Each structure stands twice: as C-alpha cells, then as structure tokens.
Length: 273
Ligand SMILES: Nc1ncnc2c1ncn2[C@@H]1O[C@H](COP(=O)(O)OP(=O)(O)O)[C@@H](O)[C@H]1O
Ligand SMILES: [Mg+2]
Image (tube, rainbow, N blue to C red; front, side, top):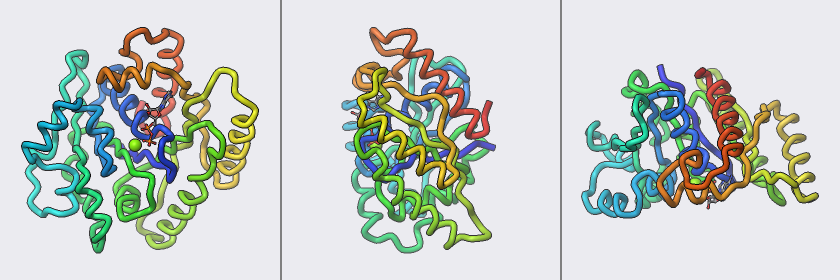
C-alpha cells in the first residue's frame, strides 16, 4: 500500500511545488519507487514543470482528464487522468502525474460534498504506487480538507525568510478544526516541517524567524526535519530545464548530497525506507 503525503503550508512561495517535484524525482530516480504525483493547485505549476510549456499547452488543447474530473466528473477514465511522465534518466522507478488546470478553482466556488472524492479516487490506485505526493494550494478550502482526508501524513515546507511563521497558525487551526470535525474517523499526522531556502550565512532576521517557527512547532508537537533544503540556483535552473536539482547543469556535488539527506529523511518520516 502506498504512502499518501500532502505538501502544505497556508503561505505561497515557500517551496511546496519545488519540493514536491524534487522529492518525487528523488524517490523515483534514486530509490526506484513508483510515484504518483497529484497537482491539487489550480495554478498548475507542478503540472507545467513536469510537462514543460509545450507539453502543457498540448495537454490543455487535447482536453484530457485532470484533477478537476476527480471533483466534477463521476466518469473517470484511468488512462486519461493518469499521465505518464517520461524521463530518459529513470530506469526502474516511475512517475505518473494527475495534472491540474485553472478550472479547478471552480470547485472552490461550489464545494459541497466533494471533500471525500480525492480519497475515494486514490483507493483505486493505492496498490499501484509506493508513494503518492499531493501538491496543495496555499488556502484553507475544500481542497485542503480533501487532501487531509486522502493523506497519511503532511509535510510542511517553510521558507526561511522574514515572517516565515505566518502560514502556520492558519494551518494549525485548519488541522485542529479538521481533527475536531472528523474525530474518531480521521486524524492528521504531521510528518514534519522542512526548512527551505536556507542560506549558509543566515541573516539575523532569518535566525529570529527560525526560532519562532521552532517554538511554534514545539508547542504543536510537530517534528522539524534535521536536514534543511538550501537556497540554490540548482532548483530554479532544474525547473527551467525540466530536471530535478541533482541533474541540473552546474549543480555542486555538496548541494546534491545535502538534498539526498533531505530525501532520505523525508522517505523515513513518511514511512518508506
Ligand atoms: N531551495 C530553493 N532555492 C532557490 N529557489 C527556490 C528554492 N525553493 C523554491 N525556490 C523558488 O522559489 C519560488 C517559489 O517556490 P514554489 O515551489 O513555487 O513555492 P509554492 O509552491 O510554495 O508556492 C520558485 O520560483 C522556486 O523556483
Ligand atoms: Mg506551488
């Protein structure tokens, strides 16, 4: 049975999509896991990263099924909604994608009784993958509830910057409300906070931010990853080249080694490895 993991923070620009992409690639390429990635953000950044600009345009033109169909259409066609991601560098592992499109935002306008649909959709696929990763939007909505219901655990990327903390109280109250509403049925397991964009020489304001986040995590009993993701052009270049950071051009070996440590800790925390 696969482990289902949501990447969530109520703040945008913290690295949810970047980490979803790179951790999926790490799990498939380095650990040969079978990975299904679900883009649950109407912005579709993850889909664009996997498909590239031309592929994404073609996908929109062809009108193939997407994550929207999980919420809006009772007739899901498996080989239409699951997109194969082809990378010549993957030999043994595999990555499949359920893409997003902006029309997903319509689900937010008319959300009634849709929160269980993602979980139900995934029950059909749980035996086909080792890891199912869900990239979430930075909002408390039907989509976050759907991801809570579908997931075994949550990963919370936090960008180390001024006011890094601001998405966390909203996330905590969203989780508490969920645990209250679904008491006895579902409970959210936090696999941990991953610090992202960490610079070698932290500016003083980042050190304050980090302390605030650590104190908050401590109060909530949330695990904080020992390994951190460094601020590196390799992530930006990689996404532009359609590659994970560890295959991007001119990436430094010590950076890739550091990222592998994050990858290993991630797999361990979510119950793989
Ligand atoms: N570790 C990192 N080093 C450098 N740039 C990063 C790093 N992580 C993310 N970025 C960049 O930060 C921006 C926001 O990241 P993204 O993953 O889209 O955030 P989110 O999905 O949380 O909105 C993107 O331009 C991405 O390339
Ligand atoms: Mg994103």
